[in-house]
Image (tube, rainbow, N blue to C red; front, top):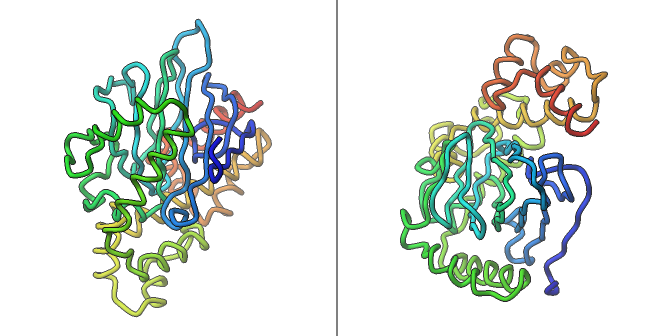
Length: 291
């Protein structure tokens, strides 16, 4: 592997949250690679996801939202996401509002870039609010990005290391011509992440040298949705981690309280709105997947 791309693999499971993973229960092998120093303020990782050789029917991998966007390149068969087949070879994967479901068939072969939340704008030059939701934006819809040309170059690269080098070269070129990310956005994202979304947006605004209206505009442009929605994603993500850590013995009432919910019905509503599962349903999923 090319020096500078560091791969780490564990058995902690799946594309979910883009953790380093080996083989998952969904029949998926995921490899994650760190970017160079110049890209680390913007890029979570490069990643490759491939199906394991199997004669079994396609299974499903959960893709939980974290407020981030990415680039996606397909070298296998047609994708099936959320029950629909997705044509094309490359896409911008905008920030999701809820969990997506990826079918893992025998021909799955993907390469991707995962940006940090709020850090995709310098590379896509498009307001993230226009890309947010659940659907993939085809590469040819944003022709200035020349993603189809990049996909062809990646296809012709003789090795994974060569593909990663091409991705890094492309992103560094985009970054040279990009406007800087506003410091106020960076500090706001960090503040919400440190508090795991468990504070009011009014409390965040009190910490800033500008008002809520500008904060909302920054989030729509760079994150894709409001600070309040982003905070909810953080709280639900924290809830999922608590459920996974606690296993089958998890008290969902305690989980709700630890995640900042003081009303069980509000906790269930938010959790299901984001993941499509109740907290109890997700706990059952964790038990089936991880044992």
